[in-house]
Image (cartoon, rainbow, N blue to C red; front, side, top):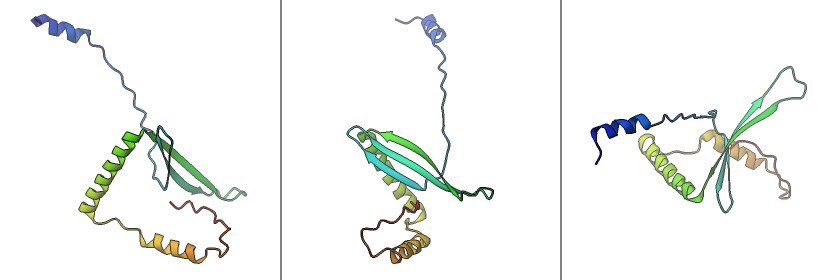
Length: 128
């Protein structure tokens, strides 16, 4: 049986736990790559930003930042379920998510300029 002083002694014996959280840098994701292996799914969130320095004679530079998230298969499936629920809730609150007209216009323009030779591969646009 625990006496009245035992509770106080347990409290005195407890140690403080110091927690350090590295929150990382927030950025807007323009592109996402996904892959998997037998043990995990790999999500690579990318931010692609052109940098132009008027003093440079080398031309513009494309800066790519990325954050990689690795999940085991079970947590990946749970993530997909949660993401689906959040998107569904968003659409209930704000309406159906559709492709912006500017992207549709750009895709039509790219398709009309596509080379007739199927062996030619177009350069990536970095436009997720």
